[in-house]
Image 1: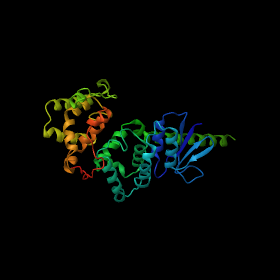
Image 2: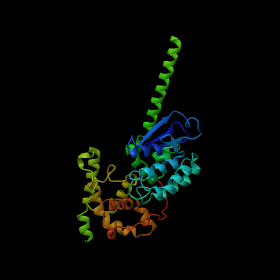
Image 3: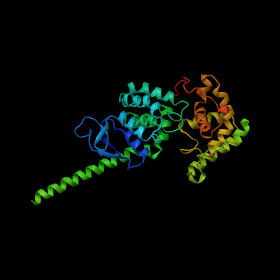
Image 4: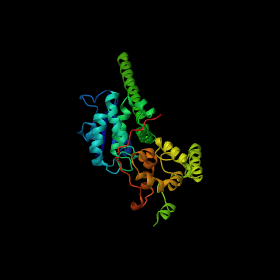
Length: 197
Length: 128
């Protein structure tokens, strides 16, 4: 049975990590993404959900990544070792106050002194989560661009050059525009009908 | 196998062929190959370390023959730096990070690898 990731495209912290995980899995029969043009999933207060069949199997980014990593261990690597990084990413790296954030960026910077990836020598779930959270954090754009943290910028740009990371925001905004267009057409169609009646 | 043999037989499984590199990448790669052939001076080391501060590989997103050429030339020195104190580690941090990546990808025998303490407490580098 296949999974559907529902994602609120206008959440205060967009769950880019989930979209990247979807791209890494790269099998639309196994995992599809359903974009929602709003801040939350309708009828809930949450910004992402993982559905399998008719059932909600996970309803936070951490849980969703967990379930997907269990289902696709060959593409979402190092699940266990990534856990603390997923927690770190969602708890610390989504903070928008730079002063508060900078302490944790220093931790990441030190970690990347001798490391090209967060764990080992391949892209793991830890990279996906940390990169996704930094991408979603509006204060990070200029921090990355100006190489305030040299290692973080190097690592970030390296992953960004991978389309599965680098194109995630464009894919999302395209999907949201598409939704808007559809909604407008629907509305337009309905209005017309009313007029005709 | 001696280290010299290891280095001369070095192969990368995922080497990107020249045909897949852009002209700019080819030029940059050839520039580093030329600089390496000219000899490993202190200036070369400083420049290489700075160059690698914002690059995972010499060019592009995967290893090329450029990585192999430079790697072979600096590997022995990197082994010495890896045993140095914090200031030596800090001064060569980007080369060491890159050497560690390439030795993994080139599958250098474990007993010949440089060994890094990944959690060395280096002072944070501040870009001038």
